[in-house]
Image (cartoon, rainbow, N blue to C red; front, side, top):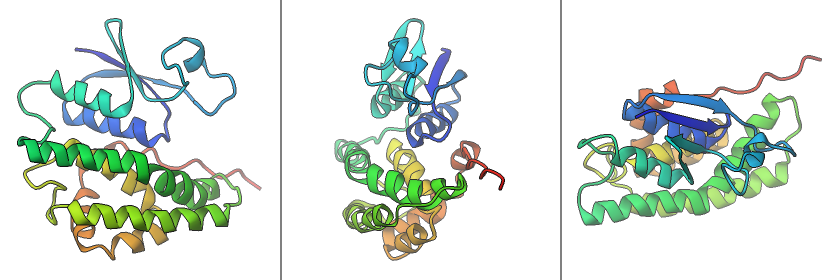
Length: 216
């Protein structure tokens, strides 16, 4: 199989898909698209009705939504899988991914990381109120995840799963802010998991870095 991945360099969701592609040793072609521009080639060519990323193409098959993409890539890659094995573990994996998407992404990435790290790297001024609001909500998310994390090196115990990659990409951005790093350290199960996950080559190999601040 050969995949075309349409994504945005700094998108946490593009990074998640790239981690799965790497984990499953799938060759792919990458097409950079900035979904934040007013007129996106991405939206114009009809790949995504809402003009977002990531999107994959394979022999005329177009798929968007990160969780669906990751499950598809895992399913078509052979017997060894990134999905949990038992019904309860599979349910827990899907639960963690849903919590991450529905409650974690906005405060951890769009508020804490974007305001406290990314905007500063661009040479801009962070919105402190947004940043602090993101920290407050992120603590609620961490509490929820702490209650269901396994307490070991993987979120659901048996081995690396899509839940680890999905949340790992989010936490990598969140802990780029010192406040996010300090918060994770206060949750023992999450901290134990993150201590191992942050060293995973899949994270380092897909790290998009930060934009260079404009010169004065």
